[in-house]
Amino acid sequence: AQSVAQPEDQVNVAEGNPLTVKCTYSVSGNPYLFWYVQYPNRGLQFLLKYITGDNLVKGSYGFEAEFNKSQTSFHLKKPSALVSDSALYFCAVRDMLGSQGNLIFGKGTKLSVKP
Amino acid sequence: KAGVTQTPRYLIKTRGQQVTLSCSPISGHRSVSWYQQTPGQGLQFLFEYFSETQRNKGNFPGRFSGRQFSNSRSEMNVSTLELGDSALYLCASSFGGPNTGELFFGEGSRLTVL
Image 1 (cartoon, each protein chain N blue to C red):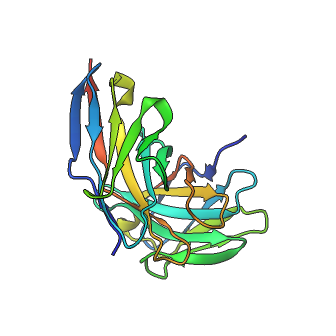
Image 2 (cartoon, rainbow over the protein chains, first blue to last red):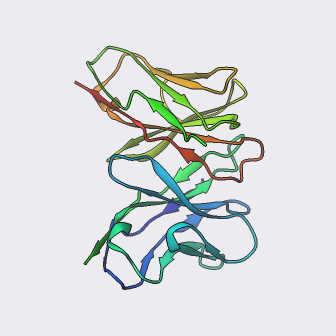
């Protein structure tokens, strides 16, 4: 079965420091990978995606993610964290075994950025 | 361009009642998906509609149903509500077709079942 795992329930970072939110995946075939962010009492906002091509994907709000096929990982990164980055982050993979490919989400990682 | 609109944003029901949630996708998007979000189970896929046809379904009981209209607006219905149905229900839209693209989510409908 296709799945994603986010091994950390919470990540704590000081403002100005780099941040990494981890994601590993398990898929049959080529992975279509996504990162979303959710602020309290809000829906999910798309950050970035990897379909094919460059392993380093740049997205919204200064975030980027590195696709690593050998390690089956797709970690989210940002060089300098902001307090406003504090939110819940979800990694997702397209389930291409389904008829048209719904998204399968990880459990989410709560990012807390302290001043 | 207006985003995905979900109504109502909040609602409270009692066990045994039914509820209908509405979703208006981004203009031009023909695919609408529904997800249930709970603290314990996370985000779980309910179903997806494209051009008024359900083309993908998650692992939920038959009490959960949906439909899509010719203008791409979608509704989902939950009958005979149970306490465990309390959740944030999220609707997402996309252009449709080969699904390698991202989904655009609404703000969600928060359902509380008492």
